[in-house]
Image (spheres, rainbow, N blue to C red):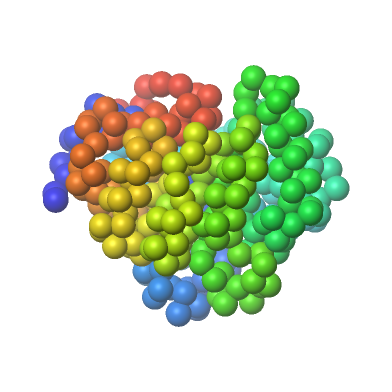
Length: 303
């Protein structure tokens, strides 16, 4: 299906899953050929997409209004990473950012208070790269803390969880640090006051029957589209989208590994195949994440 870009002229688009990686990270990932091939990462040219200016050029090319940056950090770098990400947002109106935490960071409570002060609503976690068991005691204490903040605040925090099936094989981390569809489902059930977004449709390169078994619809569970169209069969992607419905699917590209121009066309075709109307597709492309971020409707920055 060929989607004319004029289709998006009447719709706000938010890319809910982007990264500003350093050249060193791009090079390190590109050398992991088995992982690159398994995930179909488009590493060619990625080395030229390490700046906010490069992101902006790709956004302008297809009319993306805003992009949500997803940083993570080791326990010792949580505060520095959050302050750096926030400083980048202050300099660029089109850029939004998540914050990050770590179970071993000793000041998570203070960091959550700072999030509330500056208006950060999203928390990005990547258990396999940050090196912590997602359902271990430290992580549970962290999620308990997030839920307590949500109990007493009108503006709720939500958590974006990176996913990669058997990440330990690619990153050399402990298998218990992997984020799996089963763990994602457990967290959504255990912490009903936290909205969770499972990146990459809840389980990047996970067995498709596992995704369908564990990722059942929940009020507080969302799935983002980043990379998933390249690793899932068309039938499974459409099945997941239809099962969870237009209110719980969120558009993301995983830039710089994928271009918003091609991803908009691919995802639109899959949403049409799922029977989503234009208004339902608009929820996927901007409405759902805007509601979670509390930013509501706003005019496109690039018109």
